[in-house]
Image (tube, rainbow, N blue to C red; front, top):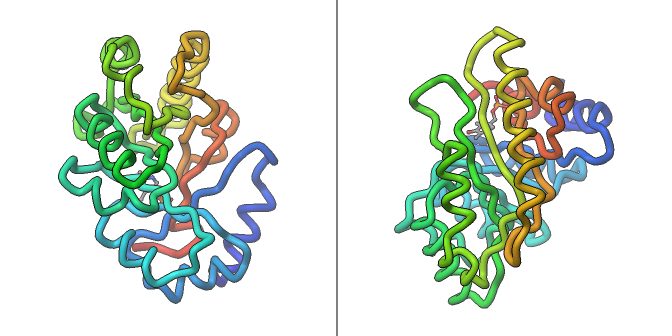
Length: 219
Ligand SMILES: *Cc1c(COP(=O)(O)O)cnc(C)c1O
């Protein structure tokens, strides 16, 4: 099937409240343009340099999402245009995003990444770290960021029960956090689910799925 066919089939299967991020990392601009021409406007990349190059070359009504781990010293390159940063997991990184957003006279939307997988390798905050971060005075003073939700990645496994448990856990943290809203958070997004597990993620309450290989083919 073509990129267009894959995209349209996945889109038609998603409930209305679920946003599709087309994960285009490593793929050439011609592939992204095929998805663009089929109507896709949100693309996810995991490397800041690659995302910036694609942003420069492509139509300006695209929303670019950074879904990978972010190095503090590279935030400045995406600050002029990035529309949502999924993988925020420290106050230090938020401070840098806030600083660079201010320089660009913008407010940048961020998701806090929560560690839900069993694997040691995945980035993210645990529940205690999340509460500490949300409670910190410096966060409430950052006027150029807005925390709009949470992101998580499940363990890479075939065990559906394990994945379901992790997604359900993320949803429960999200629901608790909603009751703690302050000035610069406005929780509306749970980013969970990829090609292999997005249906399950949606059953567990996902509002944003990040799908790469099922649209663009393997990497
Ligand atoms: C690559 C990637 C995806 C997409 O993975 P697929 O299995 O190709 O759908 C989603 N989220 C993150 C954080 C990624 O790095």
